[in-house]
Length: 370
Image (cartoon, rainbow, N blue to C red; front, side, top):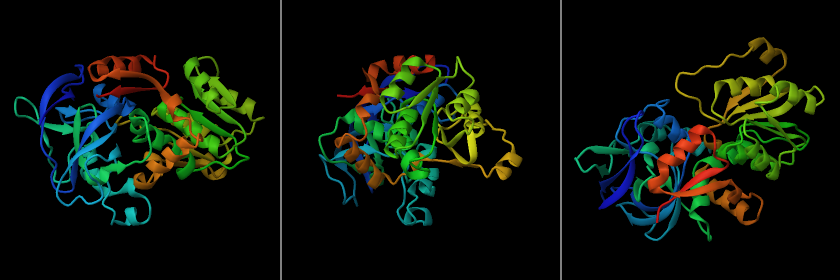
């Protein structure tokens, strides 16, 4: 089957919209007609050369659509099912999966992190006959995607595909960090550094815990305004104020009990840690560029009993948490529609990345793929 897809070929070049061939799904695979895809900073890092990916590769890992066909051995999905795509495929039987931590399954290391399917291959070929890989085993900037059956999560209800796509990454990553990885207590002061799609999702998730102060830091006033509308009690523009001084001022010199870093910048991780009160926890939600390191004071960590921890994919169980999040959205507990800042066509995906790089986007850009 022929389809159009946005291919990454070189960090110095924009994505190219090309006609490629996509094969039928193999064993334990499904082919999905993509309806919508989110534009995520993780894709931008590949495009900017900050993360490596063997080209050519179809970028995009936030996606939602409808099952078009299924491969042999697939019993839990059928053509016509609506699905959100998960970029952390899991085996369901290893120690991580059976203990409720599928986001740590080694299947993701051997497949998604190499942009291949479980057999080590791909189902996409370019017009010149090249193997074309699917970013994080998804490749949602295309009309179709072949993905592992366990990476296609069936969803129910009348859900905007754009919302379902964002649940596939940003929403689950952010909300999950706040309700799964390290939930705040009602009396806690909470800090969120970064008000992009992931950071705003953290804000919504943290708000569900009814904390005391909920402080959001960003460089853009429009993003801070949106954070306030989603539940932030205080905002700090880091261009205009020293973040630590501002946080100490808001918390009467205590610092915060929980700090979530959602920018993917090493300096922001250090900043989140420095803003902690004794006994506090900093959660690294964003993912930094390859090779970056942070510096913290281990004496302060032990003396003040501080914790620095990571959150991968919001410590989520996609097969459970995707629908759980969408049910909370249906009950108006999570205003996920507020995350969508703009919607564009697949042919405009490079413009979307340019806006992301310039920092001129407020909310997530969704690519609609009819």
